[in-house]
Image (cartoon, rainbow, N blue to C red; front, side, top):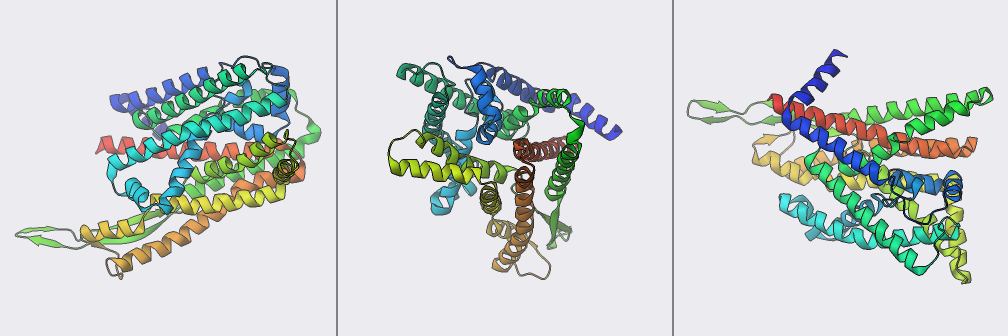
Length: 423
């Protein structure tokens, strides 16, 4: 406890670090204020019924940081920006130019890459916003059914999504941690007082086994995420001795840490973003008169309602995105080249291609363990939901997974900032 207090004291003692932390708090406060400003023409009673009986709406509300629960001006949240980031990173596999821009062109290349992601966010926000507004209109939640009202609300929520994207980037640049993840985290945490109050008012001793199951699942997810996030596979690295006159440098031994889960919480967010589309498209097509479109709508909605099939695809997407994001952010060839340039080598392994292959082999093994475990942690709440019939398990488990991952990432970055200032 004393160590924790010392770290908190060190954060607020250092002026630069204190300003970064305060900037994060101020940005999240602005985000929460924006989430309480509703768009006009909303039937609050029908909205609450829709949110309570729809798992898709619950997940979408989580991504919007709670903005969908009030149909606020930021009801789309950071969903369009996350989707555009997925598209851009998928394109890095197909386009060597984009891959070089993201990995090799340094800060300038990453800025260009981010700018392209922002440009793609706008049409995605328009499409997602239009589909969502039409869905809400069909449910009778939107009282203003005129075309002018639809276009006005669409313009407002698209602008709100872009504003939230900007706030998230400011947090990443001038604060601590990933701004987009922190916005999702703040939206989830903001619901804790309301959920706690609802639990105490509706507590029923007959449901005690279900409560115990929920608590045990939560503790398992927290412990699992902590273990997998902190686990790493060290690769020993030795620096060759260099003699220049009377000065001898090098000859030191260190290690290259390969984390079991290099991607963190990103695969979960990516997978959920992709899996939101079937129900969004299915609900959008449900009001069509064309028989083919209605058949597609029924098929998509059946897929979403089939918990076991949905869980299978959820696991596959988490697994694949863990590998994909690790491949994008960690390049064994580049690491091997940097080691060779600095006169370092892995004992028993030749520099160059042999080192690259050795690192790739270990990375694939560790990533497989992390991907399987992360996928299981993600689908366990859905399986419990299928057994118990309680929808809150599915949403609560995913939210808990994101919260734990974001907190661990934030703690690591704060400690890195403190260590840098100590040195």
